[in-house]
Image (cartoon, rainbow, N blue to C red; front, side, top):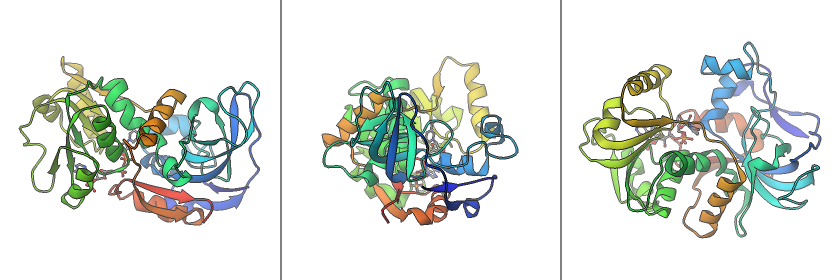
Length: 317
Ligand SMILES: NC(=O)c1ccc[n+]([C@@H]2O[C@H](COP(=O)([O-])OP(=O)(O)OC[C@H]3O[C@@H](n4cnc5c(N)ncnc54)[C@H](OP(=O)(O)O)[C@@H]3O)[C@@H](O)[C@H]2O)c1
């Protein structure tokens, strides 16, 4: 089978499209014929081996895992022993959990990290959902404990995680104030935000609004911003390790509730997202779709961190 591989740390130019052995089915796993992927900042972090401390698990001098990629959608080709929720021919989407391996024609994934694609959806849009959609749902509901009618400020509302966070927050009955660049104001309004602040016209560090929950997908909020504007906060993204550590250290000595978390795939949350999509409450926005042969270009594009919605990869192009 064809796969996107890496044997050292570096930029998108080191990626290769090459023939590798097809994975073998394992207990409680699905062998999936991958039709589409989406790309995430985690992919270029893993590709570049950054931040450095992450190499403790990824391999210090060179990557342990050869195939890149997390998000996928495709068709179940084989089921392992002990699989209970899926059968051959099911259309599924999910996240490859073990350090990469989804950017390939076939991937062997735990059934626990897969959800069923809703009828009427295609693989390109469902491959956009796993990491970014799970992060939105878990930031708002699992960790943010959002309740109907509460107000939420979403800093970084136009990218992969942000555009899902706006839509999921509205689906759960929140009042949403969203922060993005001026060029994305109309896009974020179209997602359902009640109010949109363009950060290039009004500094978020001076903003006087008060909210029940602050979600920072961009990671540039200071600790003082969380405390000034919010009752509780969730830090999703980070700009620099130094900035993230300074915010978290200040939080150590405060009663303010600020949480940081890493999203994880599970059947229940993937199915919740699938239902929101089926009901028309959430719609993945695909800014661009690249053929699988142009994976380096797709990764280079998202490294700019200015994606509107998501960037997808097709294995049929
Ligand atoms: N904790 C977790 O489990 C988890 C999971 C997934 C992702 N993440 C992290 O979350 C972050 C976002 O991921 P993503 O997939 O959404 O990335 P993305 O698709 O590249 O989106 C980044 C967004 O940041 C916005 N942005 C840039 N500068 C900004 C600023 N000064 N203020 C507010 N927004 C700004 C951009 O919007 P404009 O173009 O409108 O400026 C862009 O849409 C990354 O750091 C990623 O590593 C964490």
